[in-house]
View 1 (cartoon, rainbow, N blue to C red):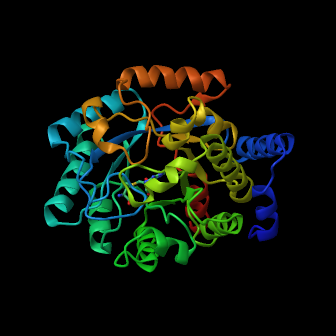
View 2 (view 1 turned 90 degrees about the horizontal axis):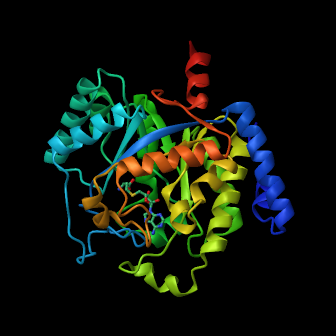
View 3 (view 1 turned 90 degrees about the vertical axis):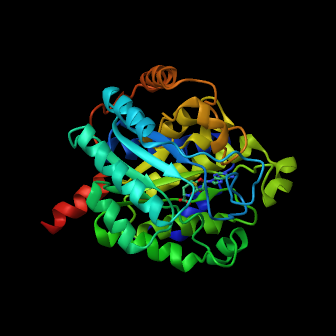
Length: 351
Ligand code: SAH
């Protein structure tokens, strides 16, 4: 049943601590019932910070000339993928700035194929590489990727326009999400929470957007201003506690409303609080994306201020992650793809 907009707005606007805690508990009960308490991991490879776009909020936007741009070569990506596989993560995600030149399209296709071969077809591959043509999405799907993340950023077209240059239309982004689904990907989307001029109604509409577009997996995180972007002026009034609380409420309300989707507890939560990702799990998220990119590249992939884990190595991150998941009484779905139950239900309905 389509969630009730007014109820979503009311839940999102809760301010009293007790009531917010109750909201998290309710979301956690629904999570237990529909997706369980097993956390699925996707090792995150931040493949390149080269980007052709100029999104006003993003630290790796094209016009940020103070960044050293990098692109990880094939040999190294395969090494990271192998590591991920040997750690039993089950899945990996390749994310990067946006490029759609032929060299890049070929490179991704080749990488996906080789990672599949390297892991005997066993590792699940998610891509998060921005807007592409349907043909490109299809080639990457045929190469072996089966999930794709493309955040709508905000479902309010006007707000979207205020955050992107005119040539990057809301309509095209939406079209891309629809193409991904048509091709057969499990489609992930999401929004930034706490954007300038974003209202409670907008967040409620974001959840309705996920429902209407039948999104399988959701990655949302707090908006965090970055000093080398046009939105840097928001840094002086940025309130991390408030941003964290708003993001956690959004996760909880999304779980309550959509029930069986995968929801990621994103790194941006951890940027605001050392235990941010665990808090995300307790508010209803069930997927984590530990960064496995070699630490020497991390400096170059600061989408937002204070991105964590810059000086840790992947093994240390894995240990810490395991301990923190066990400490809240949850387990890890090692060696499993951890597909969205929402997607599985749909496909079995059709069969
Ligand atoms: N280029 C790809 C993927 C990389 S960006 C794409 O466009 O899909 C991944 C996500 O980082 C974006 O979708 C956006 O939601 C998030 N992001 C970028 N800048 C951010 C900021 N300042 N605060 C919080 N999240 C941000």
